[in-house]
Image (cartoon, rainbow, N blue to C red; front, side, top):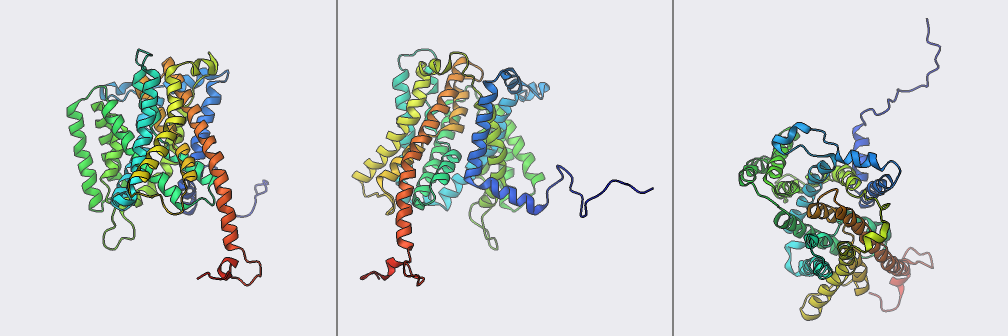
Length: 438
């Protein structure tokens, strides 16, 4: 008996079927773009804010507190979903950061002191001034307020580069290079702060034990043994031991990233650090960071509203640190170095461009939320104020930076149009036909 159901010609496509290799590569390439990564980060934060302030906010809180492995207490792995996102998934983000850091120091701009001095000083100034402003505001607050001094010191590289990519179609490439270098140094300092100042207890044996899988990981990578079934178990073991030691587990990701060689071996077109970054960035930008943002940004503003947030000295210190501290620290330190030394800005950058960049550095989303969690603990009343302050400060910095850089982008666009104009249609830009042009 024949089947009366009509069928469309061609192969049957199943929902949620495994994508083809070309489709998987296409999706991965999309996730590597700064605008998409920043967009997913923003989407995760907005979804969390909406759910946390809806009538169903209890479900959001219950989801974050859910412990998928209650029996993991013996191994310090009885963690809630929110903690898994901060300690586990974010280690992937920091692994990519470690790869970027090593590549910049070995083969990038940071290997040349002459080119690196300004962004390095800008990063140091951009972390020092927000901390100073926060401390000054909270000196008389008492309690544990001063524990949050490092919250406004971080710059979210993914978010900042995404904003720059959206509004900066004609901005000089040197502006992006400066921001990237500044953010890389900023990440290195932030990692150091987390490891040194936010380690509440230290177990030496697990920390020493973590060196074994890290060393084996480094040995295999250097010898070209990069099969996932060899490297991933070692990385997971290193992460678990660092977590058990009391040092924040994301440091394991950075240490593993530092072990990957940067320079290509004979016969290779790219180094292993670049290859690993190419492979892992989609997972970091498309999964790890958005999920962390979803669990970290869900602050309820229904009880007390913004009034309660903006009367808390801790929240005021965070907002002022991100908006004012980053601006003064980055722009001021860069100007002083250029004024009193031989260091100079790139030829195609102006101080107005640097004003926009300094404001952009005040976007401190991902790492600021992480440090806030480490400083005050998840679920506390002050933790909610910190999250709201990070969101307010980052959004304010992004809007102010956009106002400055959109105007600068329009100026550069007009210059570009003037340089490429061809009124007589001879295929040669008019600027090259002016008298005296070489």
